[in-house]
Length: 137
Length: 179
Image 1 (cartoon, rainbow over the protein chains, first blue to last red):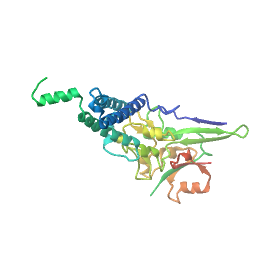
Image 2: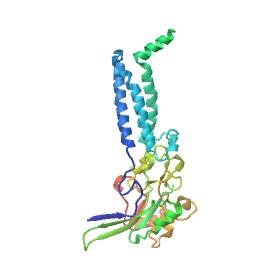
Image 3: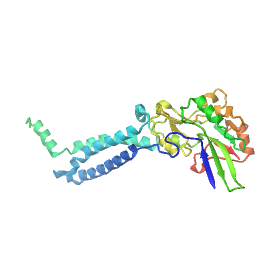
Image 4: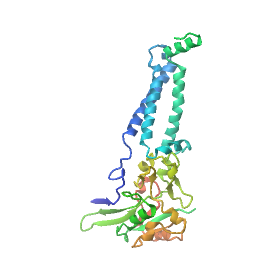
């Protein structure tokens, strides 16, 4: 028989470790979904599918942008010291997966933006070319 | 370079919790939280039952996972004695360190940052013992430099049998329990 008793009763630590709430699973789900969407939109981009006017590759970067922002909002809500979140970007800790993740998330935004601008939706493209030609729609 | 550690004689510890109260008073630990605590471990079957009472806290590991996983560098090794500390103004409260600590020695302070035992470094730097060590009525706790072969802690580890907690985690804890 082995019996261990402890006088410790710290909040979120005892009786069982429960430090992360719904925010982390939501972020992981959305982050994973965005990663998949980026792969699919990359495939569409380089395989020529973007030439089809109804291709979802026109919507995926924008949807990824929104979903990733929601995921990051969930991550932010999970922080206990929220006002210090900027500290993530004052250093890069090579041994910390979370540091890698926070920097990668920041790098993903310009990639998504570039993806959006590289192949704008035909409606947007037409509007841009109309404006360039002096035609106001 | 100094490596501060603690040696605790489990044959002397009676689990009175003086160390817990001293720590709370010294470090202004918020109500309902504790940086150190008492664990009682019983094993065996009557009449050959064995019981160990010990005071536990952050093990100030040499390979601390809480330090390596911290994304902001708030968890760090102090220059003096390699003590593991948290810089409150750099901590974002992501709780990665809590998840990585095999000893569950950290908690979220109500003000948002992560808090834990500091080996009372503010006292140690003045040449005093940590508060828990200084108040122990049975003198079961010893604090000192594990790298100094002439220190009391080194001598005790040389002369007595001891164990550390969860050695299989590979974190090289710096608190040892004499048996």
